[in-house]
Image 1 (tube, rainbow, N blue to C red):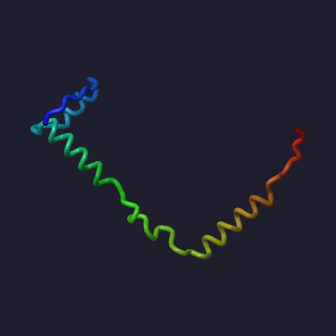
Image 2 (tube, rainbow, N blue to C red):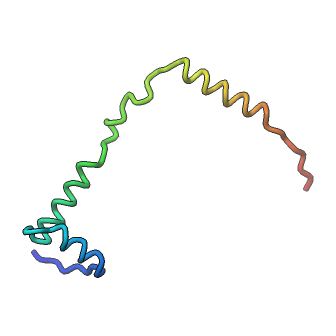
Image 3 (cartoon, rainbow, N blue to C red):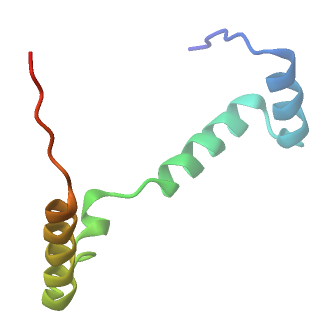
Length: 77
């Protein structure tokens, strides 16, 4: 099945320069495949934030200190 798409002149020029001897369909499929390969799965991030107790304790301490330094103000309505 063939579909007709519209491209800006700039997009057409760039694709034409990239395609070489490939058809536009082959180029679009290659670019789509390349894009899919660059996507990461959620499982790729498993274990990125390992249990680093010292880091997280310092992180919580920094948050507490920042909150303690925050000034509150009274607002009258």
